[in-house]
Image (cartoon, rainbow, N blue to C red; front, side, top):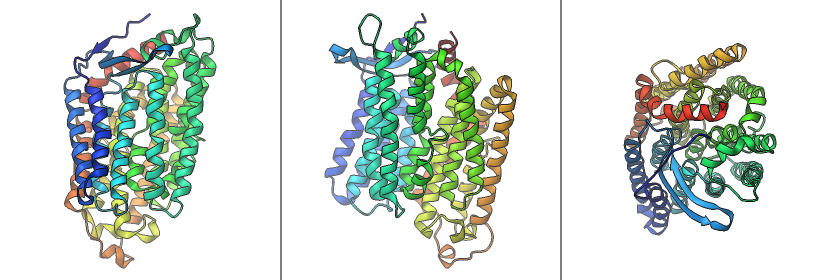
Length: 494
């Protein structure tokens, strides 16, 4: 049995990080209306600073979990308040904090109704997502996982930009609740031990999971539960609707932070390694279908937000293929690409939101000639679009290169299908970019639109700078995730 090291924290850093957000949400609710935005922004900046501090103090040479906190929660069932991060999860903390800071700034003037509640819900959502990345007890994980649905339902239903936003909010919640039930069943089956005891400790479960007699059932329960949120084809139908109807800031958090793919990586394969190897063809097949289907569907879209939604489906399909190779390069590429999505997919959706605020639509028929009136928005959209196409020099290139090389090593045909998806990615982005941003201004509202303001420019500049820095020096990311990725591969292949 492998010894997964746990480095206990002398100070409750992760608890402090999590508590800052509901405290900030409460403060935001009681602040004067003109101060609520500043309260939310201040909370996000403090959280961002703390996450960066945690990354700087993280020992990347260790493969186990650090900043660990462990206390009894429900002792009769052996359920614990158990937090910790390793090389796979640590970078998601600052990525999440930076994305939510950007969403807060992006929503600065676009939210006019019940502003206090909107910014408070954003902070609660951030609290839940950071909890997902930090939990090492399966019941505590489910607590944070299900808590994300409460703020998301209201954020979509009340502040969405589409006429069918309430339908989109309800559809999303029903899909996610449906996916949550298999997860609960899987964690219960995992918890029941042969001696009649219960085990919800993640670090122990992944070491005894191979001996679980219900491993194949657990695999499919986890695959369905996380597959809905990922989303895996054909469980993706909520995504285009949500992208069309929801508030761009909210959608940026959903497409940028792929919690479902993280769950597949963290739980589905390690908790059922034999079943994962037996059904490797299924994981590879679902991922490949997602890559190709998402790219082809994106090519036929005439709305920028729907195009970005299908593009996200294609990219997350590649992540699933990377996970399914069960190789070090594949896992490194998958984690790297998930981190990329926070800045690339999230940034593109925020820019699409800025465009919608000015024009009232992101349909190609309502655009054209945007570059003439909004050159800065056009330039940054193009740069993040290059990252979306995995152009060398951007952070997605090394991530996808790792996945593609790993895939070709094991499955040549799948590698060719992924390359086809990459080529299609260039086709659908350049096609819609040419129609929406270039050419003559056909509408007066486009000709009169103002370019990015200072606050919006700051958001896009920082996100683009992160994409460029990680693209030019990817080793700074790979150094952090390598040791934990190697342990993951060892656990899965043992």
